[in-house]
Amino acid sequence: MSPRPRKVSDEQVFAATHRATNRLAPSELTLAEIAKEAGVTAGALAQRFGSKRLLLLALARGAAESTGGFIAELKAAHKSPLAAVVAYAECMAQLAQSPAALARNLAYLQIDLADPDFREQLAVQARATRAGLEDLLGSAVSAGELKRGTDVVTLARTVEAMVNGSLMTWAFYHDGPAERWIRDDVNAVLAPYRTKPRTAKGR
Image (cartoon, rainbow, N blue to C red):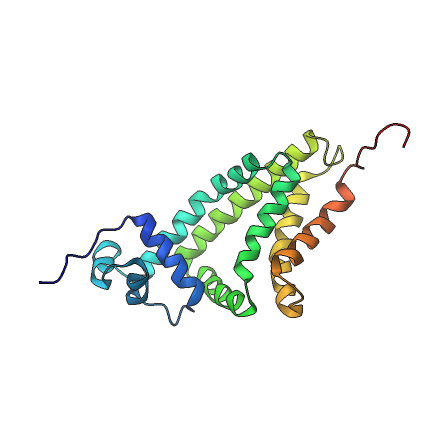
């Protein structure tokens, strides 16, 4: 008599799906591979989610809905709002642990752009990211880290565009880890807006 398949939460399935997408291209990803990663049967996943596409769509929806909370967590974890901005950029570097890994992520992005249902979730995630960056940069102005009068709306858009572009240029050059490459780029973008560091009197 075979053991009953163990039950896993949706969150555990999503985590397993994320791990599977990190090592498999869309053409290689199957419900069977996801089920193997999650420790359940493909039939159980099909019964719960309906299909691989619907499972990936549920994962995309969860990512979109959690983006605002993710950036808020970064803000809470760093005393400096600008440090939180840099931490966000470093987190994005996880998409490019290698040129091959970035290529896989770009293949999934192609689905996000081509499929209207995925595209909708991508737009939600992008808007939440932009709003989160605007909040962090606004807090940096209030904290005296950025110059008064800094246009945080435009700067947030610039940072967002730079991070995405930096991923691509890192793949072109492949000079050191992507995390360092993107951190250097975001610091270069922020540099003209930073206030001068305070020095002790008499120095």
